[in-house]
Image (cartoon, rainbow, N blue to C red; front, side, top):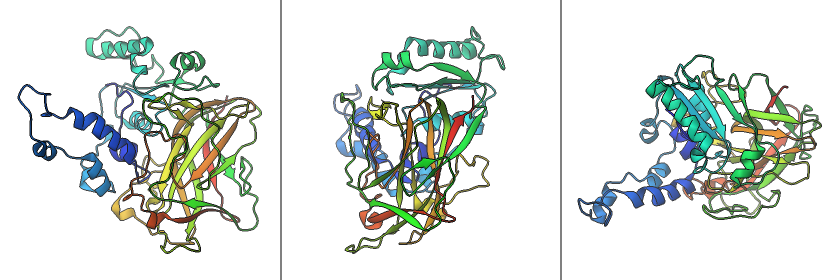
Length: 438
């Protein structure tokens, strides 16, 4: 099988990022791709048209089901769970580095946990709809399928150890976005023997109250906090991109009242960052002086960005050809419970169940330690380049058509107020980055 930009977890990959409903894409996909192609629509079938009420009755509407169901033990989501280890057929999982809001996680996790004897993962870049048809990628597909379906293995897919299981596309330099020829020319390929990559050094970069991101451990000896505005549904997303648009390069993403950025010093040598990312934060929420509601939730939206040596942010090609950053992650703080005993849990991959029984209270002015899963990424950081880690209360630049903005899921009455990140003795905040040792 070749899950080309596929999903392996309906809840985590597609519907609820960190427990937060990804409603914009579900709504877009449902009305553009599903309803318009439903069997029985007027003039679409030789058997005749179905009346509108029957068409509605025949639909299991995802724009409704994903709103009224919130947890993995709800029957709606539980019915879609399965064991990846039960997959035994030969597997070629193809993930797109730019698919950091829908498919990328599923391709990586699917590869990691599939039970196949012969399994491979290949990374690509570009829009969701184009790379599948590139000549090189078509040949990869044909050679894999020929090997296992026709017994014609001209490459070595069916010979254990003949082909390295990991084939990387390294995002290096700044060829622009939505420019396939430039990307293909700029991003080199290389193979590796395992994922995560051998030689990965998971390195903590600490956030400071002065907005720095540093390998030096926390030095704060007194309590401090940095604050940003909390928000619910209806928040405006900077540089909002709609599918099908053509774009000029957006400006380097800046802080807003609803976000805080932490920036590294320029890297002194070229450094590969490839693999899983995680963040550890100490957070709280408080009501504003004139606020009439009591906040009871914190939604965390985190983003990792790359600033090139020229001081400009480098944008990559997203699913719809839109400009995206390195990667993103999310967490609804009431679902912060982590299952450290699970076989898939790691310091770089916090594992949570998202069950209704896992919900924990969020009270104003109480500090909570949380671990945020950030989706995998890849970049060759150039000498003089910098990383920016952004924490926000809503979608920021790079979400494109994957906004999290449903008024029932992102209730302003629960989320309004001020969000805080706390520093001081016993309160370290950091991002775990996969640095590849040369």
